[in-house]
Length: 554
Image (cartoon, rainbow, N blue to C red; front, side):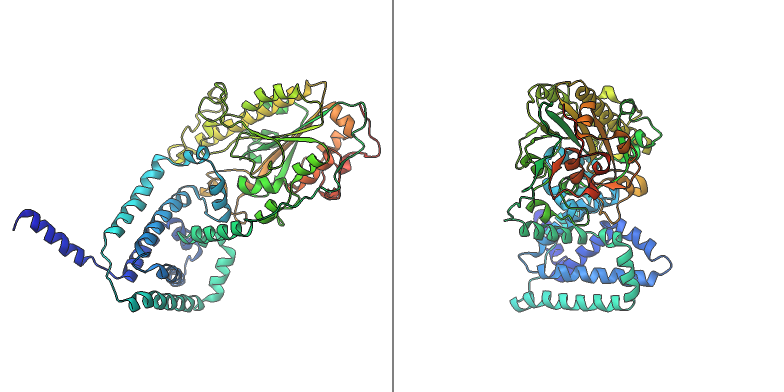
């Protein structure tokens, strides 16, 4: 017998030894996923069940049987290996973000992923991520393809998944019923526990996202501005209006020195007559949710994706009231907000000064604004959607010459940076936003031919490693204040304050009030004296700081 024949025989014998039943392969795969892709799940579980190892074991077995019940219907010869390989690869991806960054893959995160761009997502594809996927995904997936699966009769092939699913559900229910009250309390109080389970949470979230998109596939947008008109502030013989609304990105209120932060991140704004509202909560923790929510007429508790896509927003109301409204974007798009108004994307502008790295810093806005302002002859609202402080590549959000705080983290892999380096890089983005806002305000202040104002508010905050969390997008129920407290800053020219009869000291007195994105829709309408039943005076910050019966035009 030749060497080749001997090797072929040994390989054939090995294939026979390794042959397993479909259910056996499913159990082996689940065991692997439990062991290799659920470090956070086990860590939280150990905390939750401290001193109660039997309860922990019972609950873990129940989760295992529920997973088996979900996997078993895919145990047919045509679907078994593709399904298991997909689950292994999916768990490798999601466990990386869960275990290294604390990112939970819920429905909102799935939505955020689906609307992101290559430019934004490429920074998350690091060497650490790729090595993790290869070790915990590609290698075990290859092993699954190599394993020989036993073949059964048609009856057994179809009957086994049904039987295994039924038995698994029954066993899981029996285990949970042994201490149902305690288990129910844990699931109610520690939602982060099961949210960390891979691949359970991503699969459930994907199903929820698919259902949401299916429900809204044929949605017709409903107008909400039927009665919107300009108020008496728009009298004759006055200057055209230019109000700039800056939609910030990933800026958290805690790192603004205007709000008491110990690092001087806002020296330029501190020298200007601005009002900084220091207790503002966001509508969500990710752009895909917060941005459409903050411009809608729904508060955070009422808002849903379905409502957002089926109703017009405050920009539509302003437009129909007779103002010219535009959206300028240096981020990942307007999320549907500018579907009915003019818009322009500046993200990939051909500008050597601001776009040298292939992405533009927010300095790109000023170059465009200087040309645009000279052409304004009608009342205008301009929305600038910043790239702001979007991570993890904070160092790309500002020019190298603007790196004030050093040493700064200059990689997307935080494990190679100290907490101070991460904080320095992030603070540099806030300082650069300070510079951009100050430049914009100073430019507006010099436009004597216009009545000008600026309102800045970020869409959500950011975690910088506190409690093991990085970036943003945590489910709101467990999101720390770092992800939900956002800066909001107001500046008004004298001409604007006079035209709209706004008392700045009154506005400054509101700086410490408890506010949220819920106020934005109504406050923009109040600020710009747009008359409509859609405006709720209780949520309009300007309602108590102006006398609408006494308007001085100029």
